[in-house]
Amino acid sequence: MIKELQVRVNPKVAYEELQLKIYVSTVEDIDVNRIRAIKIVKRSIDARRRDVMVNLKLRVYIDEMPQDISLGNNIDYRPVDGTRTAIVVGAGPGGLFAALRLIELGVKPVVLERGKNVKDRASDLAKIAREGVVDKDSNYCFGEGGAGAYSDGKLYTRSKKRGNVDRILNIFHQHGAKEDILVDAHPHIGTDKLPRVIENMRERIISCGGEVHFQSRVDELLIIDGKVVGVKCADGTQYDGPVILATGHSARDVYEMLQAKNIKIEAKGIAVGVRLEHPQHLIDQIQYHSPKGRGKYLPAAEYSFVTQVNGRGVYSFCMCPGGFVVPAATGPEQLVVNGMSPSNRGTQWANSGMVVEIHPEDFPEYAKYGDLALMRFQEDLERKCYEAANYSQVAGAQRMKDFVEGKDSATLPKTSYAPGIQPSRLDKWLPAFVGNRLREGFKVFGRQSRGFLTNDAIVIGVETRTSSPVRIPRDREMMRHIEIEGLYPCGEGAGYAGGIVSAAIDGERCAEALAEQCFK
Image (tube, rainbow, N blue to C red; front, side, top):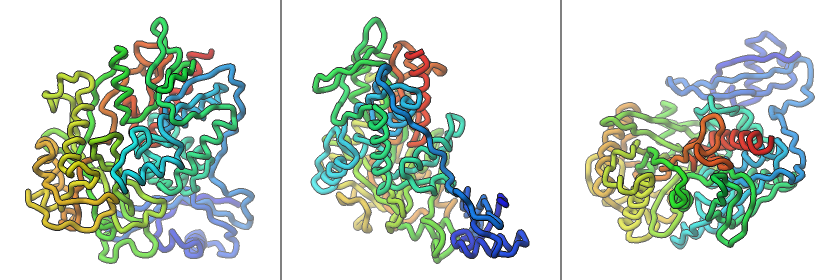
């Protein structure tokens, strides 16, 4: 007999198999020896009160051994013959999931990625930290796997209405992600594990007859009679077919190319601010309401904050428990920071973006740039940050309370940011529109969580790559560009997603639309 239960237990019971068996046998009045196995189907932590509890959905096997207790459902990917071909520009989550979905639909994907494969990419990331050298095509934003590959692999999304989240998680699991992502309320693969999953996806695409080309930066869309019929790469190579454009939120040259070709784009709101880093133990103490922190059983604690300051949102973004702050520039004379976590979330630091919502009208001095207004604002702020860091990747930093109170930070604590940090008055050189709101937001968050506003934490500048500053408008139903046939703007870079899962969902939707409209 198989019985499904919903239970609410303390962390020890939740994370120790024997304790969980004993608990189930007691509440269900069943001899513990009759329980042959327990499978956790869903798990979430409730830390709203002092006594932290764990909510579990269980599958209990009574008097029988399970034949297969895997939660995943594998998709049968079959070879494509190549008679129908589509171009996928970008090998981030939007592009990879678009390619896999095209294979399911019998269309051969040709994936063109400007950067290197996910393994070779790692050496270029190390150069940024060690030497301050940024490869404009291979960095934390560009390369196989996109921005998510080396910046955490968080799979939690609020975009439930956009598509089937469980399907996306299942595909990740099918390609090597641990089964926990199907169970946990806030699933997470980890920066150390995600590259292999991405490699498996690439190998799947190739084994089914698709193509994946690295260091193939697309410089031009080929348009005939108002229809996209292919692309041309920087080396002159040309590929024919309808195009899914999934280039990520930092492909500024793509936006410039679209503007030069008079292909409609629009300025879009973004959020900018800083990366805030606390000792992880302090966040554990605050979130789990205990001076002992998370103890033996609980994972590294997360947090989420949001408030309104003078008509604009101030909020935490991309929170990385037990993680690192990393350099995320995509070109010379830029200083940008981001965050990531390994799968065990085991470092001594917690970090998150702390950002302020910005609309195009908030900076009228950039209106002269038209649809690229906030992109130019991003560029100028990143350059200013780089100059404030003495033209290096050694980031400017300030203790959190000093930032709020407008004081110098004579010393700084140890940080996870590998290139290093140096004292800098971020409160002075951040745009007042941003800095003033951050200060007020920090005060609110400090009142909401006692101990959060502290000089044991530091702010590191600057965080600007929260989302694309440009939207490529498309027909809501047909998913293609509103003016040009054969072009399917996709994912974060097109302004229609905000994370790995939502980008993957969008990639699948674009693939379905392309297959339906171009290969009826």
